[in-house]
Length: 238
Ligand SMILES: NC(=O)c1ccc[n+]([C@@H]2O[C@H](COP(=O)([O-])OP(=O)(O)OC[C@H]3O[C@@H](n4cnc5c(N)ncnc54)[C@H](OP(=O)(O)O)[C@@H]3O)[C@@H](O)[C@H]2O)c1
Image (tube, rainbow, N blue to C red; front, side):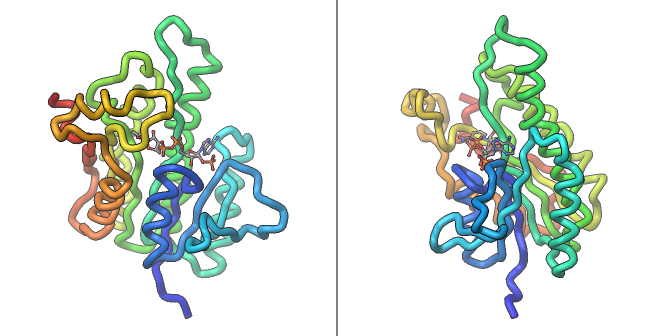
């Protein structure tokens, strides 16, 4: 019987979520969520890569039946005896929305994926943890100093960051909660990554390994909860 603990990576199909999921797969069983439709032949089980088997759940922030879907999926996993040692909520978007371009629909879409969805996922997941587990959220160094062309995104991350201690209180003592306020780790294709690196004290952008180390540190630190680790190479002090 496979005794490896279970983790869930919400938004773990691509980019940073996927990097963490692939690392965790070395010593954990994995559930990964994606908003993409499941290939019909997968039967809910697929591989992120040939070396990373994972149970795949389809959770789309825009799904009007999202909450019952989450509950049903997690009840099904619970019925199989699956309880989580850890969860990473990595889903998000990074829309450029300069002042003057705002309208209710675009603001609601940004906040739906970057704020409402993580909160709903946290609420759904909480009853499905092992005692002593950790729930970790991917935040942004923008919560220290908002990005001027990304104020709606910055607002969502700041709100989520402000709730980390509240979630820690809500879930204590069974589950610990922490956030990672990331600087540039996987830059968007259209940005000047070298320029952004020069704006940090460490003179470099982050790497997925920087995040993976921090996720494992929180997972292995039973006296840490309600904290936000800033992983931005000192960008906010530069
Ligand atoms: N990359 C960086 O350098 C950086 C810097 C600071 C903060 N962050 C934060 O770190 C997290 C990961 O960032 P990232 O750049 O790796 O990825 P990302 O492009 O922000 O996307 C993360 C995940 O969101 C999921 N997603 C997209 N639309 C969704 C929807 N409608 N419903 C549910 N999930 C949806 C995607 O998976 P599917 O397409 O499979 O659904 C994707 O795996 C984000 O929260 C981001 O704000 C990243």
